Length: 272
Image (cartoon, rainbow, N blue to C red; front, side):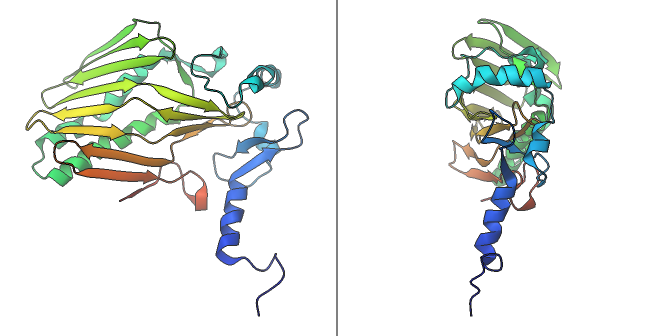
């Protein structure tokens, strides 16, 4: 006979509900902040009000900034909000784009590879590698319109980027060596949710492999910045990353599991 006690029944679906409720908690004990979501970056279940007291903000800074930002909940805050300097790191978005070239040797290997499927494996590995930069949760400064950044002879690569639009902020970058040509346009749409912000990538990335002219196109997953004001800030990118060989039609689809679901750590993925 099935149990009528909700504490004893539920099975699989009850465990799912429990996992989700443990992942995201609301701040209910702070007057004026009721309902704000605080997500423990370690996937723990400790009291959300304790997690909310942690992070980079002093209490007085947190309180004053929240009074301003609560008016923007639900809005795209890409270029409409003045942000406090304490959340920035001392580099520009153009420099951040150049960081993506750190493991560019994987694109060299893709160009040299004869097997079309292994070629996609090397290229997909390169695009996965860029997520190491998300470990730093500080925001780069927006460049001024027309500002450029050039990186010369980094492992044989020349990279140049320019800020091509100020409102909304948009950047364009180009890198090249003897094996590949890399082009990226950086544009995002955001949605501010109170203690987090969803970031939707609208720009696109293309790589041309020089040996046979194969063109690869990337569609990255969305990104979510958690605990902007309350708690320790951390970044997750749940969803699909699709890399397509536009020349042959072959593609790789990687699904990044949301952090904390069923005990997963940051950036695990499944290949389809």
